[in-house]
Image (cartoon, rainbow, N blue to C red):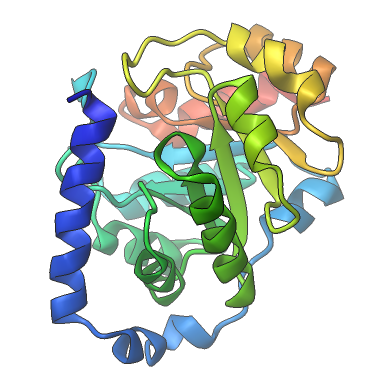
Length: 262
């Protein structure tokens, strides 16, 4: 069993437990559920920011503890003040140290669009995302069947969420293009081995249809890497570990944005 398979097996257990505790009707009664989402798509199309999706990330399976000493409020407010386009909040606990409380706290602390970063395999998780205050959900092609991804994307759009589809290969990309996806993200990290190379983003960029906003994910550490990706057509850059390894992630984010702004 590779790490992705372990995560998905655990996710199925989590979802079954969550469903037994909080019903769909209870999720739909949450105050945030009826609120209109803050559009990340419109933020990108406006083109007035550097395109950084700044991530709150305590740990990872490959790196262990990254930063678990700072509050969600401090980090996310710092990202907003730095000029980030959006936030990515990990809600997987066992492997990444994230919680639903992190997303709820981030929603209260900032007005940026929020991506719920998790391994989404069930409509129930999408309802959770809406109820907790997320604006965008992540669908990872590597752990979803083609029809499953299509159905989840359609369901997310139906309740007013935007959709980021993550791919790792040409095959994943071509098999899963559909109109209910807003953003296509190329993950530079192999989820089976956790090796990282930005060459993956460079190789796939021209295959992504131009109607989708292109986002590069993982392994981005320098302004030169981001500038190179900007030149070939990427509008968004999901970055977590680079910022979270510092004692002031917001300031680290600000320094990078100042270097890459046009």
